[in-house]
Image (tube, rainbow, N blue to C red):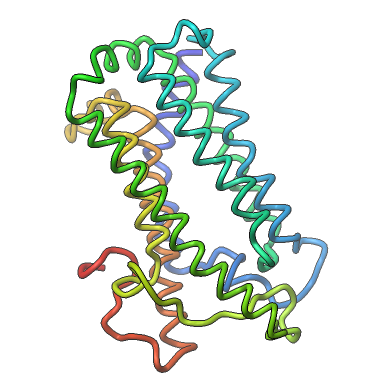
Length: 283
């Protein structure tokens, strides 16, 4: 099991730098880039989202309590219980609460949820396995006395709240669209879009992405030691799943943020030119 865990960690580090840049050239077929034509390969946006996200906390919980370093709840330290709870809370919102509050969602090509299921099963298993491991137990011993732990938890909470806040702006656009009957029936399963305003939308097109990155940066800071930056062999040996999750998210989401930012400018001539794509004032 140790060898499988290490191999999965290695590929989680190596694949995103290759797959991420490809998305600058290929738009993942969901959301505003959803397929225009209906087919057997186009699936319901809300149902597929729930399924592909729900596998992550299931995989996480299974690895935490049935993995190679499985522990009972009573055997976990308080910092481990807190970090496990934060992971579950994030995915309860992402997999159940948020989609059920969504009035409508664009359809998706089936390839998107299939790839997401694979990613989320692997990521959830890595995170659960790490959090129950001797490495995590050792690192988190005395965590309550370290400022970095509380800074990380605070960043997680701010990112989580910011993610919900900015998603609510998008949900309100959909609610108003649905109430006014503005759904574009000429494009199968595509939602009405408008320019979002308020909060970090003043500075970037994808504040929900930025907030999610902040959330998982905080989580990694609280949960795991910093990896070695070089050489590569040492990085692969010392990088733990919380940092791998952040690494994967940034590299796999940044291209979509850039492409979506360009889409806004193309479809809305009045789109604020001073807005960046995903990092305020920078990118």
